[in-house]
Length: 177
Ligand SMILES: [Zn+2]
Picture 1 (cartoon, protein in one colour):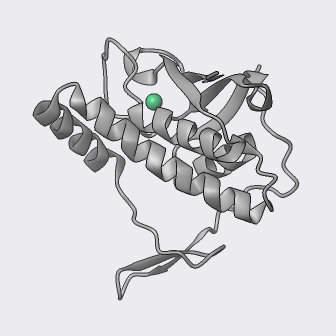
Picture 2: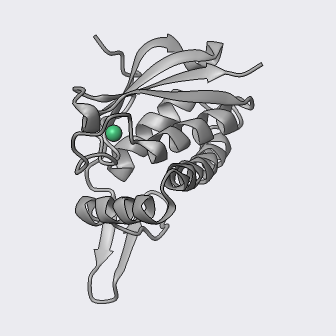
Picture 3: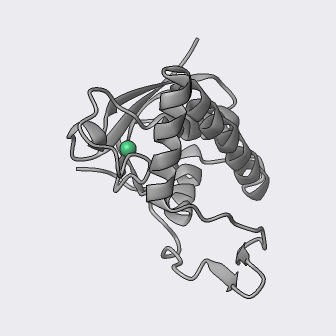
């Protein structure tokens, strides 16, 4: 049903060095320090943002995701020498950051029209019975990576969400203009 990208190397599962004595976790591939957030604590943070800012919380969360996504895209372009692969960059980030398993469910990011599915989404893991999709951070992350790597503006439409009873979270990516 879903197409993943063909990987040359199997995904690593020994990504981090943990120095518990000094409170330091580093990613092995680049030595960058990592901040680990628990999913229940994350859900609490989202809930409190929504209580405080109401619909403004969605904008804040989307912008947080978007900024971080642009950063991921910039790093990917440097590593892939300007020939960034937006899907591969997103899939790798999702695997290595614990977002979930990201898959292509039709279309092609290169042509500006694609559906991306996130299985085991961490962003809405503890949100139940939502009436609309709530993965604002995910939408922002995808938009940020795709805009940066492809160099055009894209609209992200959240269509399915585990929080509203769907089997997985799904967004539609559409190039604008
Ligand atoms: Zn989700």
